[in-house]
Image (cartoon, rainbow, N blue to C red; front, side, top):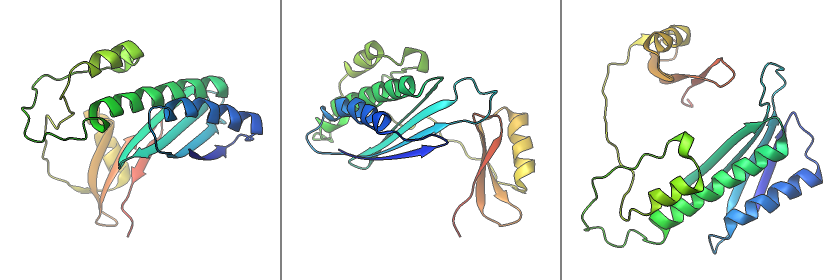
Length: 195
């Protein structure tokens, strides 16, 4: 496993790196080949944020991105939680997609949908979800709407009025499609395409 660890507002001590590597090796046991893993350990400097120590882990498996993020008051606890989450996601991925290899493309699709909510994000819920063979996530709703030219500030106001977490619009300054979204710290984010 090749792990790239980045620290933001934190000193990356050898003990912290070793602890992260040890926890991520548990997830590796589900696969034969090594992963490229990117980890970001960060501490929010804002004293109003209670769970200020965040561990983010991202890895790719056959083009599929597996990502986990957890925040607590302690970096070691954040690493524990995110490693557990990554291990569950990898186990779920391997059981659903990897072992099947999508061998039988002509098999009958199941119509039952499994909803594992954030409250049920534990091993029991994942095990229940994995007991249903042949179920794959699918697009269940499509929505079309006209994009209107506006500024990022106007888009953020529209987003708040609609009560959405994100809002797509045409940036009146650049003419490109942009997206504004709510950030965890209460501010807004803007996603713009590269020119």
